Each structure stands twice: as C-alpha cells, then as structure tokens.
Length: 280
Image 1: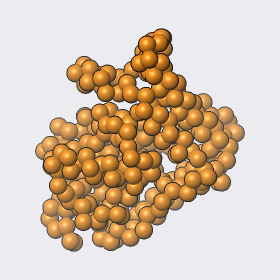
Image 2 (image 1 turned 180 degrees about the horizontal axis):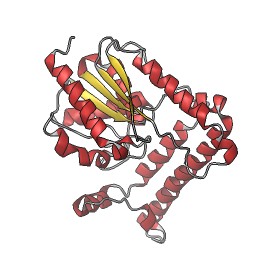
Image 3 (image 1 turned 60 degrees about the horizontal axis):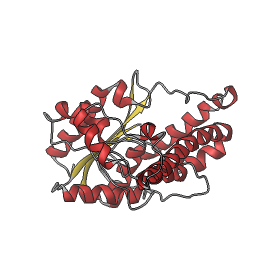
C-alpha cells in the first residue's frame, strides 16, 4: 500500500486489522517520509525502484496486489507497467496523473498558479527546516525546530521518528519532490498504456473540493481541473480489459478517511480474483 504525496505508512495503519483477514498487508513509507531515507530520484519510476528494494529487503516476494492513493496510485501503475510479472492486481484510490502540472497549467492556468504558490510554501517550509537542523547540528540555535519535528499518535513511533526524521537531507528531498511536481517545464515519463488483462479497480472521489484559500477566480476553474482528472481516470481504465471505474459516494480525494470500507472492499475483490486465476 502506497500513500500519496506527503503521506507515509501511518496513513494505512487503520486498515491493517481488516486487511489481515483478507491477505498479508504491507504499507511502504514514501522516500523521505516516515522511517524511509531519501530516495534515488524524484520520478515515479525512481520511487518504484525504491519500493521494490524495500520489499526485497523485507523478504517479501510477489506477485503483489498494489494499492495506491493519489500520487501513490500513479506510482502503482508505473510498477505494473514496468514489471507486469510482479503485479497481480491494482486498486487505485483517486490516482494522480504523471503530467498534471503540464496539463493543468494549460487548461486551468489560474487554478494552477494558486495551487503552485501554496505548494511552494510547503517546499520553502521544508527548506527552512533543513537549514535550522543544520544550524543546530553545527552548535547553533534551536529556535523554531519544534515545528519541524515529525508527529505520530503512537508514542513509540514518535520516539523512533525523532531519531530518524531530523535529517536535513530528508527535508530537502521533500522540498525537491514538491518543486518537481509543480514544474510545468518537466515532461515526466509516461505509461505504455497496455496492462493486458490485469484486474484493476479505480476508486474515484465524488465530493471534489477546491483547495482552501483559493480565490473565487481560481475556484471557477475547478470544473476544468476535475475534468482533467476524470479524463486521466478514463485513460487508465482503458489500459486493462479487466478494469473498472467505481465512483465512491460521500468521498472526497481523501477516500482513506472518508470511506475506508470502499478500499477494503475493493482490495478484497481484487485479491479474490488474483487468487482464483491470475491469468483470467
């Protein structure tokens, strides 16, 4: 299970008890988040190689049913596309698109400009934390470091995170990832567009919401942004002859929080199909 941008394995923690009755479940920390170090690169194919290495080190062998939310869904598709023998099925939870910045900056330029400004604010926060941590390590002031400390509800996890996460290179990696995502001049790698007969369920939000703080002018372009994502989802469904797009009622983009039952149900379906006959 792969979280979206800014998330890590803790996003999937509430699912493990339910999924344990279906199959062995494993959630992976995104590079630069949770317990993971920095990744080998910023592209989705780079992340796939990081995830494959993580699972290999854990002694887990496929084929796997991959569950990916948002950017994690995009990465799951790349995984299935590059290594079809390793993937038995996909559950894509409102997946992102690899060329979102290029398409959105063209189709909804005002909405993109405001979204980019907000995300660059997050990138600058990470860069500031990197500088503050380096200053502390050099014997300087510790003022402002508290806001850079990782948070976790589990005290034991929080204690471990405190020793792992306060690494300036992690913060710089996170900042670079955000800047890469919103750089409309970068042409990311694309899928082959052929997943054969791979079982796939795409869960799509039905309560699309504009990001908080958007101007009325930018908010007016939200339908254009929604249309972009829906077009991308339709393309993904065309990649496999056994794919289904399933709108999830009463769910925003954060389907993990709004409708966890829909994700557990979808994963149970795909696991059952894969176990019955992976070639069908």
